[in-house]
Image (cartoon, rainbow over all chains, first blue to last red; front, side, top):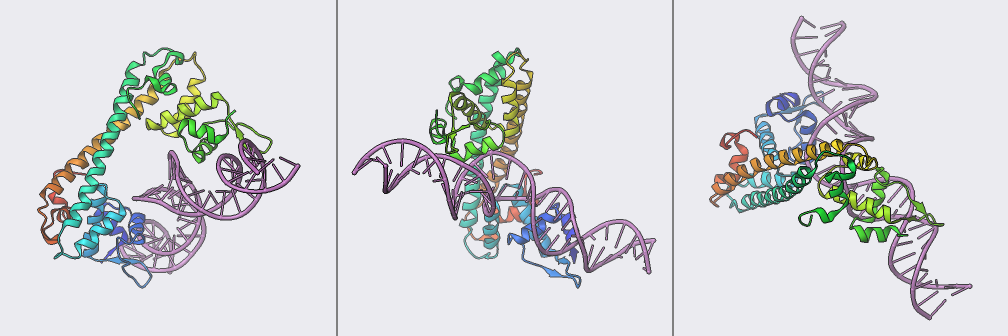
Length: 137
Length: 137
DNA sequence: TCTTGAACCTATAGTGGCTAGAGGGATTAG
DNA sequence: CTAATCCCTCTAGCCACTATAGGTTCAAGA
């Protein structure tokens, strides 16, 4: 039997975040002590580690809810879980691509800046005049 | 003299967003018509294009506020603007690096998934067991 | 001049994934 | 028994918007 603080220390998930996950339906409301404090078991610990791991990998809360639901049916085909992970991977790749565009544009702007007065500053000028950009964004 | 809708169409910034920028102090409160509607001039159009461009490049609102303040002093050295852009570039690069870590971890998880039952599914197992991961995250 | 419909106004609440704080009760070590 | 530390609920705040409600103004056509 762990108190919420024990669970927090063991998983690295902050106490208010654990309560938030309960509210979001990722963790079922637990047993309580006589004084109404949450008491957890080992399965809750594993569940929370699963959630934390999924969050670290960038899955959002609805996706984690689905993954949890799937993991409760071990006999079902795993295409669902695979699809969720694959969709997420695509989203991550898309985000990387768009950040790399930004990176190149910013590199160009910063490297052109000679370091004189604001009047000639490429940073300010590039922002004022879209025509100085390489491509659409 | 443009109405807010004209400004919106010309810059691609939505009407409520323009009002939001005014509230955030990026655009000074404008002249109003007799009936209390905002009326803009060409300088406002340029200002808003500057803001939109900076937002597209991922600058946050405090940074844009600073850039605007700097652009009002054309005789000052441009080190300030350069630093803001450079800091932002570093942040973008850091975000790319961390997303690439995610990408590799997700690739590994998805590619291991054979497509059988949830019981053996690598996606679910990898999430349950951090030990299956390559490195810390 | 009048009417209609589009555009405008303010104010408030919602998005996601937490985090911080107030104001109280429970637990536990000494 | 007391004091320190934990825990409880509830509410509000973060960011950059977006959406809605309920009302007013504007501009073009009849």
